[in-house]
Every structure is written in structure tokens, then in C-alpha cells.
Length: 129
Ligand SMILES: *[C@@H]1O[C@H](CO)[C@@H](O)[C@H](O)[C@H]1NC(C)=O
Ligand SMILES: *[C@@H]1O[C@H](CO)[C@@H](O)[C@H](O)[C@H]1NC(C)=O
Ligand SMILES: *[C@@H]1O[C@H](CO)[C@@H](O)[C@H](O)[C@H]1NC(C)=O
Image 1 (spheres, protein in one colour):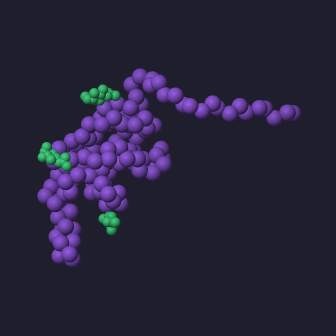
Image 2: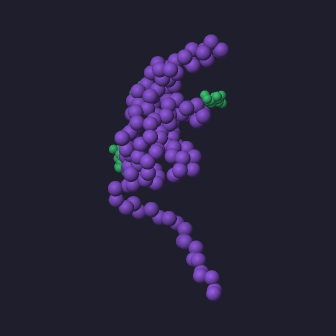
């Protein structure tokens, strides 16, 4: 087992590489691609990260087939902004980060989407003076 772990660790030098998207658009189909290498797991998960706008990693594709080379998925309605990154992580172990993309921007959905917010806003009464 120790030898196998050493071989795997050595192979990681030449492992899965995510291609950084030029930009993505919220609430629409987006495509992310990667270059696989020998020793990569046969599948992995994709997560979206943005330290200021997201409350921790957001799973965007639960399972992708490594040999496919790309995946098209509908991005959730995340806030528009820059400094987003995508991580390829183990399907059953998200702390096993296979690769992280460089940062890119996400733009807002092209037309207003009909999102039902669901909750009435609380009325704030002015303080009696
Ligand atoms: C995403 O792409 C699929 C397959 O091409 C299509 O059926 C679907 O309507 C698209 N969804 C959106 C929100 O664009
Ligand atoms: C991944 O894709 C390859 C080629 O299309 C296919 O042979 C294989 O069965 C797929 N694996 C999974 C887990 O879907
Ligand atoms: C998950 O992956 C991390 C990083 O590779 C590793 O240290 C940890 O032991 C793994 N956990 C399990 C339960 O496999």
C-alpha cells in the first residue's frame, strides 16, 4: 500500500488539469473542459468557489466522467462577480482536490429569471419619535 501511495503521489505531478473557462453565465448551460492524465480517477466532482460571494464550496456537477474531457451543465443562479474558481474533487472525498482552475468571472443571467423569492420581506416600522 505504501508503494502504491508513493506511485500515485508521483503521478500527481502530471495529473488532471482543468481548463480555466474564459467566463461563465449564471442560470444557463456552461461547459467546462479538462485534460486528463494516466492515474486520474475515472470520475470526479466539480465545485465552484468564491471566497467573498459563496458560503463555502458549491457542488455544481456531482459526477463527471474523466474520459469525456468536458461537461455541460446548468450553473446555479450564483451572484455575478470575479475571482471564481472551479475545483475538481474526489466524488466521495471532496477534500481530495485533483485540480483547481485559475480565476474567472461569472456574469448574471442574460434575461431576468422568474425566481420566486418565497418569503415576504419583514416590514420595518419607523421608530416612534
Ligand atoms: C441546456 O442544454 C440542454 C441540452 O442542449 C437543453 O435541453 C436545455 O434546455 C438547456 N438549458 C438551458 C437553461 O439553456
Ligand atoms: C465514461 O465514458 C467512456 C467513454 O464514453 C465510457 O466507456 C465509460 O463507460 C464511461 N464511464 C462511466 C462511469 O460512465
Ligand atoms: C480524502 O482525501 C484527502 C486528501 O487526499 C486525504 O488526506 C484523506 O485521507 C482522504 N479521506 C478519505 C476518507 O479517504
